[in-house]
Image (cartoon, rainbow, N blue to C red; front, side, top):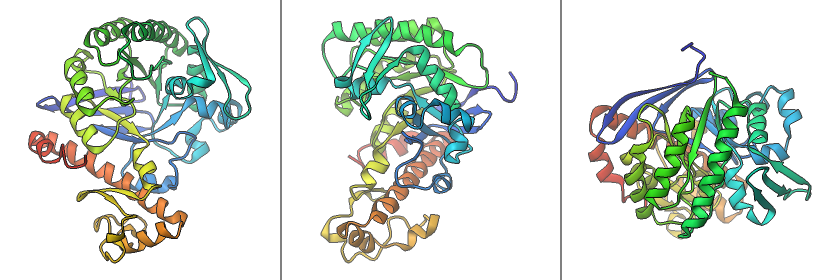
Length: 371
């Protein structure tokens, strides 16, 4: 293995919680890690430099949306998304599989072709095949690339879930062939199977047979309860290779993350910190705070006195409440920045407690705190 190779080191475990480190040519990622979502090359409402100040080591971009805008040619002109958006650390890209589900009214699945989309922007026909997805992600110059998969909506229909596994496994093989030999990047497989243990086992087995640099659990956080999600993780996460990073896609709340770490997950992404910020909801060590609430109108305290990024600790809850009620965009910018900062502080505390052997105590203290 060369210094510029993608690699993962499992450093220690505390119960099932894992402390690790992913290495890429663009930098290291301490795990468990949270990836802010920059779907279209921007983490909504936050300057790139400020994302860096929060301690964020990796962000997520989206293949489908970046294919449509700005498009492969512009991304190639900048040698990828890093230079285009002024982000010099690692990037993971979703393959577009989630859009197959979220934009299901605009696409049709063909196992042999891929997903055939009608663009939500201009109505043009877009064919997103496993090969095309990998090509776009390479144009983005992603450090961690996801295989194209079929992510079904929440269902108890085992036949539909089994079909999605068949399609996803076929696409995973084609994705790996298209990916070729590139030790500088990681290629991750995505397990499906809904809430059924036997289907998850089947999907994971097929992915391990193909062989990937990391493995993701897909098809969760799609409407099932937190209890259901934790139960299927408990039953199946141990089937993933111990010495490869484990990624739970699209998750989630702080308690979702904490519970998943408790079961052995290493990586997370979610739009929640910034989406919540745009609606006035702040995540803090006091719990979730709806800053729109009138009780904060005269509150002189800040969201977090320790956060000095852009003087964020100098803005009172009273002022933020005023900005929200005045419909000022700065409200969503400040609260979104705070939320990303909080999430990264939360992940740092998780890692610290795993290292110190005190994770179980930390877990018991906070697992119900943010619900």
